[in-house]
Length: 341
Image 1: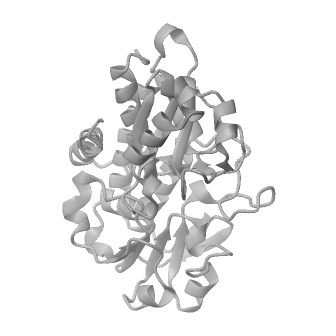
Image 2 (image 1 turned 180 degrees about the vertical axis):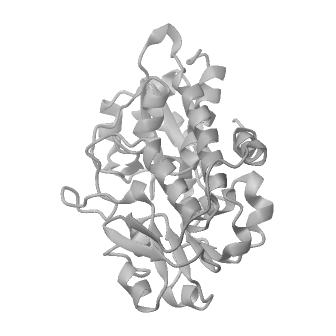
């Protein structure tokens, strides 16, 4: 099995090199700065000094922008921090790898909370709602990539009518860099991701066929429905980036699908998530692969029969900075299997 940590480190090295080598590309922020964020208007009179990265994507963007000295805590980590950010992350207090309490965050006396998911600060959040932070004078920012409508689906993650793309992530990086008055770092990071995205866009499958993918995040048990990446989420974006398509056609961001449905989708490639949270046995990629190879029905799918099973960081299945890293992981493994040129 490909060493995921080595892949993450190798794929991410260019981001840090790019930040160090790229000259200043943007001017200083003029305060007060007012932004429209997921239907709310947020105003900053100055750069935050005591920020919390609530959710892995938010925390890692702040770390990639070199803001660890402006952070007083992080929480909610499905996976371990990017290897190249470990030293910076070690300087920031970890509140919990799961969902924190509102009280535990307020105990750090934050002046800003950047949240990765609506389940962390959205209208139905069990942690806290935006208005809860407003009442205590703490500004919040929610990832634009996760501001989804819940009108057509019952779960809090919502659904997408169109395929997600990196523009929303670039907007997030740009706005966070403006908030902290480090816009030059934000533009350098965006330039690095754009270059890597363009390189991956040139991927071509063997014999120019359009490979179909299933992205399996996890399952509570082998008999339970699987959490898979929806058609228009980050998983669909990765498939499209590599010249293929998502075999899952549900609009929901995180549909749960029975194995009969997954078998019927007839995938050419199954991407299994690697998760460090260890909530369920099937969070482990080796457990997923064992199930795929031994289940009498699932083992007959084209992907399993052709050994087209690849491992990807589970966080990359969320629309985050990890998505490009995940696409690079998948591309490298598929090239080794002879499925991509």
